[in-house]
Amino acid sequence: IATNSVWLQAKIHELLALVYYDGLQNVVPFYDQRSMVPAKDTSWIMEDWSHAFYLGKLCEKLGYSHDISFSYYGKAIALNPLAIDPFYMMHASHLKLLYTVGKQNEQAIKVSFFVKLTVVAAYSFTQSIKDTVMNMFDRMDLETSQLPVDVEGSIDANSDYKLEEVWHMLYDDCLSALKICVDGDLKYFHKARYLLAQGLYRRVESGDLEKAKEELCFCFKSSRSSFTINMWEIDGMVKKGRWKTIGLSGNMKVLEVNLPESS
Image (cartoon, rainbow, N blue to C red):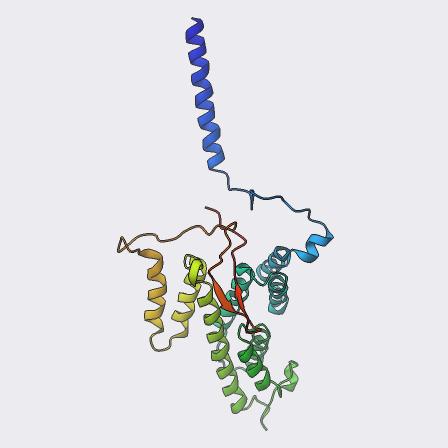
């Protein structure tokens, strides 16, 4: 009887352990649980880039002006120029904003179009594009009343053409930034790859559809199979030492992933 009791108790403990194990496996892991959690004090708020990064995401979700969310992303990039997360969010938000606006005849929509292009241009990825666009906008005041108008009080044709030209320049700039987000060790960053494909598809220029399909196909094929789910978790504890790009200053820099996706 004693032997049976010990065996039964051991069996119960084993089953309980399995239940606890399953429960732990179904819990979303804590962010960066392998490192020390910093104190969320004033110093951390001023120096930790993730604080500005999440403020930018919150402002964007809550419908604040684009300039506010972009400024937070810009601050996060300035605090840690090597982090890919704010870099991706900045240019992903730019692209989404650009492909949701288009050329319209209504005067008020044209004015809104101009203002949005100005905001995106201020946070361009390529410095030369930023300088070119800002030079084109030199005679256009941010105040809508100062937009160039013709004798009938409408935005003149030349300015209208310039807005379309600027839109294409900024759109190409966003695509260039997203291409960097899927280069090298970050080739499995599927969110950036999907958005890049979406951006190419919506641009509707010659060859864009095939390019978009190529980007998406990467996520569904491998060297061993013609069809597979080819997505990997990006580990934030591993620094991406082989991934380099040219920053706004022209210097080479190594980007790294700091916010790992949950498995």
